[in-house]
Image (cartoon, rainbow, N blue to C red):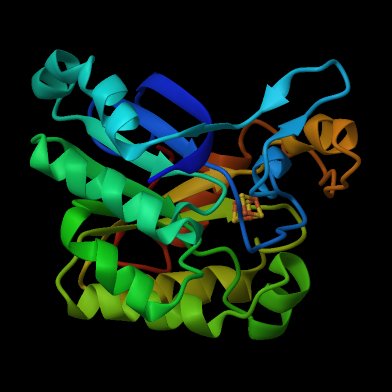
Length: 251
Ligand code: SF4
């Protein structure tokens, strides 16, 4: 089996516990207007104008072999492997096989997901995932459709399913000034986190404009949101902490 990835980050410390290797799978069904990685959207291997290639084909076996090279660091720190994207669940069989082989090799596994996937895909991978880093981008249905181009309902169905199955979840909230940082969005996030026992914490991810240049180079467009001040993240943490019992933090 082959799939397409576009990046591997070693010694990552913000994408799950301990020291981790993050493997980014190419392809995403969403089109978040603020996307920080538009080079992940297409499932195809692409080229920037300078000739640099975006993406490569590989196999689950080769990925796990590469990840295992740093096993002593994971063992010492409680780390492991995190699958990211794009949307890793969009290459469902490839993603499942990486996770299955990772567990077989004794690795701790996490997945960063938009939660937008068929329920049977979630069910096919959940036994191999130790921690779900689950994006909650917008909880207003109309705004979710407008700003991510995909409906909210599957995202809510899937997080509720994972919670009912006793899975460990960290709710990740990308915070985009003027789009999803108003009081009604914050209240809705607090209420959802409190409803779901499996949500261990809420991670606040302040907007970063990393996608703007990359989109331009690929002939795409993402929204260049107002760049938030340094204190933006801690202010959101303080506001949301008043609206939920869960631990709110910046990873
Ligand atoms: S932010 Fe993530 S989920 Fe949204 S379009 Fe970009 S890669 Fe896809």
